[in-house]
Each structure stands twice: as C-alpha cells, then as structure tokens.
Length: 400
Image 1 (spheres, rainbow, N blue to C red):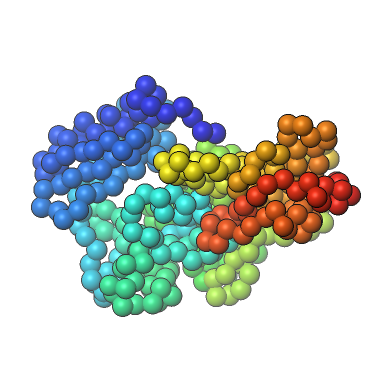
Image 2: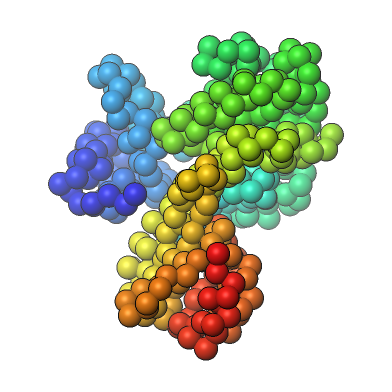
C-alpha cells in the first residue's frame, strides 16, 4: 500500500535523521536529500556521488530496541560512507557471491540512476544477481562490470555459485517449523543456497528424503520433508507470515529441484485441494507484492515525466471455495493503462451496466486490437488503449 509522503511522515523524519548523521562523518562533504528514503552522498576524494536508499534500513529498525537500532544504523553509516571500489578481474572473482532478488527490485534499481545491474531469470518473479562482497561493503555486478572485466555473465555467475558452494553448509533444526531444517548462513546469503547445484541431494539425509525449499526472505531458508503433508502445510503458512513481514522479502512460494544442475521449479503438489490452494495462494501473494513494488516505481516515474498513464494494481482475493484468484482492472475511460498479468481481467467502470470478469488469455485474444505489448517491462504488463466496445459481446460470452 502506498503511504503518504513528505517531511512530516515517519519516512521523511528518518531520512532527515540519517542525513544529519552522514554529515558528521569525516570525508563526507555534502548530503543531498532526494526525497523520502533517498539521499546522495558526496565524499572528498571520490569521483562521483553515492546514491543511498533507506527503504530496507527504515523497515529493519522499525520496532526494535534503541541499542539494536543504534547498532544497525551505525553499521549502515559505515557502509554508506566508505567505497572500497570494485576490484579488477581476477581479484574480484574471489569475492563474488550469488544473490536472489524479487523481480520488483529490478524495477526499483532501474529507476535509481545507477548503472544497470546484471541479472538473469531464476524462478517466476525471482531473479539471480551477483554480489561483490567486500569486508565493509557489498555491491552488485553491473552490465558495465561485465564489459570492464571482459568476462561473460555466465562465468561470473558460475564463480559466485562456486564460492558459496565451497563453504560448509550451515544446517540447523528449525524452531519455527517442527521437523524442518534451516540454512542459517552465511550472513546475507542464506537464501542464495537455492542456486547451488546439488543442494537438494546434499540435504536429503538430514531432512529424511526429498525436501521442499522455502525462502521467504533473503536471510531465511527452510527445508521441509516433502512427504509430510502436515509439516508442509505448517511451513507454507509460516513462510507467508515471514514473507509479508520481512524487510528483505524474497518469496513465499515452495520450490523443489528440477534438474541436477541447480535449476529449481515451483512445487506442483498432488491433487490435494488444501495443498493446491496453498501453493496457488503463495504464488499470487508473491505476484501481488512484486507488482506493488513495480507500481510504486512507475507511478513515481510518470509523475516526474508528466505522463498520464494509469498503472493498475494486482488485486488478490480468496474465493468462497478457498481458491485464491488474481484480478486486473480494465476501467472504461482509461485510454492509456498498464495492466499486470492476472487470472482474470475485470472490465467495468462509470457508465458500464455490468462488470465482466474474463479469463486473462481470452480477454487478451478477444480484445487484441486494444492491447499492446510492453517489451522489457519486468514484471510483465500489457498496455490497454481505449475501451473494447466493438468486442464487448464476445467478452461477455467468455466471462466467468
């Protein structure tokens, strides 16, 4: 949900607090306020400014004790005020680590004025990036780094995965989900183990057979026996709760090994209505949050550029039979809109006698003349142009 912005908000006050602390650090020559939770730091002896984003820090310190709050802010200030720079290849290769991010993070990073981060698809709404993990800072490999190093993206990803895979797998019994196990490190990369080939084979003995993986946040990785329905059900509920509350959320969706080379896939449960609904719910909650992040970025972009574009929300609701369904609203009167991919397209608005709910594929096929593809937008959206009055009879026939 988009909150009210401005200096009178908690976000604004926090931004001013961090700005004041940064200005006290030797070597920091200036700090420009770029809006709530965004600063530009100028440092003596550095060629360019440092863009600082405070969304994660703001979420992390909310509700914690004063000592922990002070410690987290202090650690952040050290990282934000120092710039070790990225080493040349092959020196950088030893510090590479794999990372997993929600695809909405790609939309955020693309609008921040920073150099484009190199990423590849990993799972629905999840991408793989590569971090340069240094003693007091962490950055992500960019497209410019690939060119500067003269190394293919695949080789960099393989080196990062090998670096993580060569360390000891820190496995511990779960306290939150009885009968499950957690991967508890390394700090900042627990979820990254999902990208390591052979992981599911490596944990099979400890888990007691085939395992289901849950990575609701960057630092949370849970493994559950796949053949234990009660534990799987409990773990899915736990993952949703962690995901919706985590400052660095990743995915509430359950994953299993797809191939021995490290590829993973969304778990397809047996024909058990409870499990089927639970997995469908997790998939749609993930889509909801990722589209919400993208929507905030796009709304800000169009406000700054003065473009009149309606960026539709993804709507998710539970049906009376327990199924969770996603919807995108196509409103009459909107001549330029961006719709997220959903189970159903809702057509209605002012002056429309009835609201229709049409399955996505049917709506896109029937109203193809009023839809445009939007290449390169992640997560994917379609553009609607006008109102499909000429084909309303067909849409009505296809409605559910």
